[in-house]
Image (tube, rainbow, N blue to C red; front, side):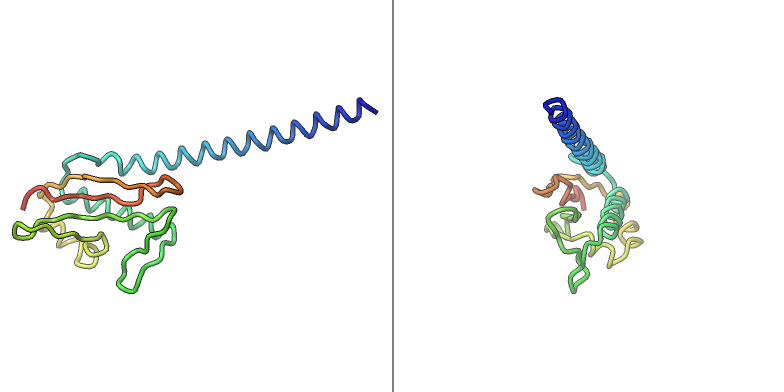
Length: 147
């Protein structure tokens, strides 16, 4: 009788151990995936880039938002959620004054016009924010360095 109970406890213990290990591996894979996704945006932090590079980041963020089914408001702006939405913000110079534009504004105005006017203008990624819940990139801010 004791051998049977010991055997049952060992089997239950092994099953619990297997579940814990599987959960740990899945969590580790998830963290690795988040790290890889964040690395794309983090590569731009404090780097000086051209407007074409900024447009590439905008396109990537837009594609990610669409892939993640992020909803848009009535103005066509992606609605921030607490897990996987991404916003790109541009602080640009307009006659010496700073103006802030969202990535959706750049796409609405037209990417060809942006490239034509800002392809050789330098921008610098000055800030990256992360979702509290998932630690995924939430917002990336680029600042125009020259007019």
